[in-house]
Image (tube, rainbow, N blue to C red; front, side):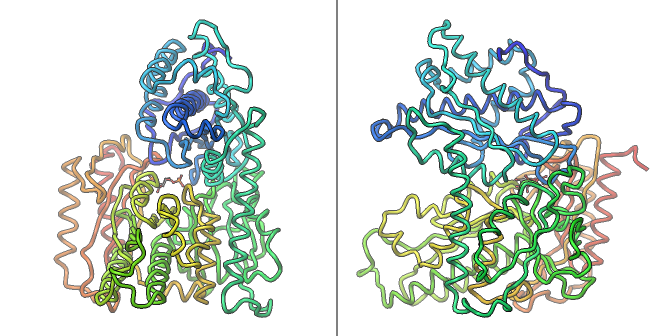
Amino acid sequence: MPLTQVPPVAIGGLVYGTAGFRGNAEDGRLDGVAYRCGVIAALRALSERGRLGTVEPEKRQAGQVWAIVGVMVTASHNPSCDNGFKIVDCDGGMLERRWEQYAVDLVTRGHRAEDIGRQLQHIAGVEQISSTVIVNARGTAVLIGQDTRTTSPSLARWIHRGAAAAAEYLCRDEGGVGRPSASSLQVVDVGVCSTPALHYAVWRMQRETWRPSSQALDAAERVLSEYEERLVAAFVQATASSPAAGDAASARTTMVVDCANGAGAPLLQRLCERLPPACPYRFVLVNTAVGDADHLNERCGADYVQRNRQAPAVWDSPLARSPPECAGSLDGDADRLVCFFHPTPNALCLLDGDHMVALLVDFVVGALLHASDDDGGETVANRPEGRRPWRVGVALTAYSNAACVAFLHRLRKSCEVQQQTRVPNVSLDIVFAETGVKHLERQAREYDIGIYFEPNGHGTVLWPCLNTSPPATQRHLPAALQLLARLANPAIGDGVANLLLLLAVLHARQWSLAMWHDALFTPLPAVHRTVRVPDRHLIVTRGAHYELLQPEALRDSVNQLVQAVSAAPPIEPHHPADAATPAPRVLIRPSGTEDIVRIYVEASPKPLAEQLAADVEDAVIRILHPSMP
Ligand code: G16
């Protein structure tokens, strides 16, 4: 398809927000954005092909590795009328910032075919995408995945057209010489999959060599099925190796999983079918109506449960009448998870990303400390060459509850105290990043083991030590952690993989969800609110803790409100180990995925948090939406 039949971008002022482009997709409004995402994905893959050819000539000799970029069609937790695009970079992670900017330029300024052509040439020049690369682009592919929205298949076709047109246009620019054959840049649609599965496919394929006969679709389907096999195998092994394995089937725990009527449902169904009868968990999947777009994320899913502290509506199961003791909710594209249980029929206890990060850090640090006990009397003198303390890093956002942060600091302190009299084996850092997996992931990758989570249920454990350390270090990673590493998605946070990972850890500890909930910390009362205003971008903040800078009137109002409640009489400590209850906190920021302002208030006791949140909401409306009554 030539560049002359380019659909227009029907939505103004789009930004590559927290996780790509998003908007209302009705009436083809996102077709133009899809097309331009295809263009960018093709260019990114071609630039990677060029880099592999010049920078890593040894790979040429060993056989070429794939140069792959993914585009996921999804608006994740948003309502079903929305859709969007998450571009998966060549390493399986989030798109590099420079390329985000190219994408924004193309979407906001590439109005006509000529504009797109000019920008294409500009990017090809800056990124040194040579004519040789464009013509000989075998082993280069754009993989398209889609969630279950009704608009996804047609948007996937527009991505396909954009990617193919970009490659064709650049070839034509070479004077018509060496027009690419059909197999040069391959653009393939893998159909419905979870976002993390697409990340995994890209991550895995770029570690493989291709042959002249290789078809990207075959390779993608193979690695996607390998992703499922890997998860099942690691979960079976992790839950079989615990001391309690082999107990009677009656001891099995039933885990109810709300699939949000989205892309996680078919994936989890396939995984569950392959679990052996001896598996200590029995999964009951609810909200699996993927053909019914109206029900996607509708009163269900991770976002709904986390923000409302409410159990999901269950559309397709009698379980609605008997609240489960062990449950989890995925979101529409299955990249996040929250867990919950009902201590009494009408109450809900939530286990969000804070509980997940606390459990996993506790487990990882504990395993590393314990491993050093097993080493017995290691000294600086007899420590094997190349071995140094494990650097464990935890990356959080300002939305993490102060009680969780306090727990992690206590853990860091206790880790230091335990190692005072011997050669330290573990160090623990706690760092903060702005909202968004893309920010957290960059921070977490700086460590040997990086753990990042957002309270909304996005997160994972990353194991950079397994890719970069000398093999000697790998051998010293305790077996329990090597197993966890196989359960975690190596490319990105993954709701389905995390479900299995967390259950494996709970099984190893012989903990129920209730024990997990009570064991680590008690969150301070927190309230989330969202407000729709005419222009959410009037809110300007600074840094990972979202210091409010603009509008000044709002900043001053919020400061006054916080000071007023801070001056209130002291409150009882919320956790016995906390010396004092932290001060009330208010965060206000524009969402990067929805046309809303997010307000987060943390204060104790709960009625104070509720009142403060209501007052802050009033201030936001008064200052940013003066016409509202
Ligand atoms: C995306 C991002 C998350 C972020 C969430 C909400 O998730 O990947 O990191 O927490 O959006 O972002 P915001 O507060 O800016 O709306 P998802 O699951 O919606 O793709």
